[in-house]
Length: 246
Length: 113
Image (tube, rainbow over all chains, first blue to last red; front, side, top):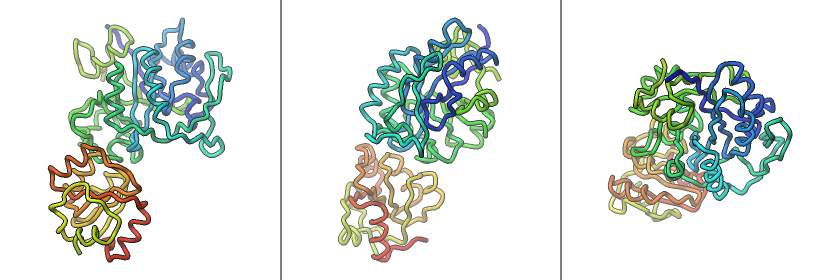
């Protein structure tokens, strides 16, 4: 068992709101240099830059988790994390079938770049990513879990796009593994400041859109046997001697 | 003015709470952020929203609202309608946009508080 530092919410330059410096290679390079062992790549409603991040991490000590920040039809943001690229790929098919049909407006919203592990431009993603899917909160949670992933409610301490801002409270029975707080809320104070969190585990992450965000933003430290999602799931729940390092 | 008066004059469909239409309407509120509704909607109001999630029922119940109107042709989820029926909340839908509906409500005498 050893300590792993994890950032479970990081955007690449595929997200229209992220800086172009957020290439998979650059993220992995900075992670390796700054002792960030686990990085989840979580672009808005898309996973196209995950393969490049996995390739960039090959031969390094950094583990990349395939993920996505999903926007439900209630305009709630959720971080979906997967163990295996094929699980994310299956989820991307579901997402593709539930898009708005609108195309991105690069001038107003920002460009959506797909790149390879050496920062070469592969494609410009045309579909508008920064908008809601036609899937409900419950549908997203159920389907991500069915594919073997886990769901974390994004930045519940923020006044926009959070399950608490949109829906007032967390619907009972929702298949959430945890809630996330942003850098504005110390993790230890989250449950007190936001009683609606109830008994759910609380995690924090950088939600980085720039390298500066990535390096300075909050992260988790876990005691794990290995840097896998299955281990992180246990640590979040304090199971089998896995846990969160305070 | 009662919810029934509004149902009789505006393009509203009753989805749940048919037996509660006699409730008095004392004001109106519009928001799609449920956290905001919980803090600011006055009891007795009709609430206009695009959200169809089942949490709208609990929010309406907590705030003591006269009715919830899901606008813009949005379809409340099946659990929402079932929950509204169980909790005795009047749930209405309208094909009108929130803007149009609020205009018509205002003209009918429903004011903000």
